[in-house]
Image (spheres, rainbow, N blue to C red):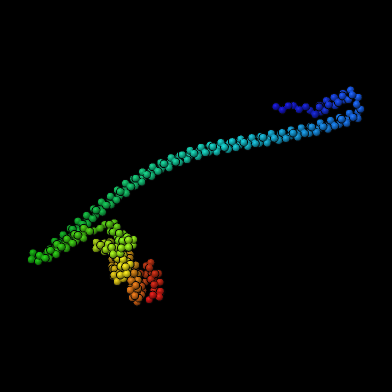
Length: 307
């Protein structure tokens, strides 16, 4: 509690009366009395001014204290809001983690179902392929028996002719037994490529590709097999055999390798030193395959100084 301050005018009056009484009793001269009174009054004014300054400073300190207290309260409020936000974020994080766990469980379930579904598809495809293969074999056997019945020799014909027909029937049946599905044919074709390009075993690759051509020349990969036979011979420097193999490519179905095979024929003749024959092949290439991706290569070969 702040004490009530005595008014300066009252204090001045009290001091004046006290001083008059003192000097009246002591018999001091009036001039000395006035001088002392003046000094006393000046001291009082100075004290009063100092007191006012201190009071002003005190008020300023109180205002600063109020401002600081207000700022502290604001900081406390901000801290509380941050703590509340942290709790909210923590709750959201837990909810997201729970959602992720649920999704992982669902993904695992879907993956398991997908595996089961893929196995079912594969089983169905295998079963269908076997059914189609058996149907084809059965149909071929029926046609073969019909042909045999139509072309059966008379009783007077030599027994060797009858044996020849039987042998031909057995051979056809053996060919039917080696019929491959498209997937099996492609798998063996890939094995041949691995032998040639990865394992660097050209002669084994040639044997693999020839086996496929003996089984079927109507497969979409038959021309590819013939082309890689030529590449295998080319890789070991047997350019004559390579030329013969490359020439057969355009006689097979599909023919997506025909332009590449014709290009390698030109290169093979060049390797053999038959430059005129090689140039003739390259010039013919531009007429036969004007839209081939190898046209630029062929044009560069013709422009080179190799001929």
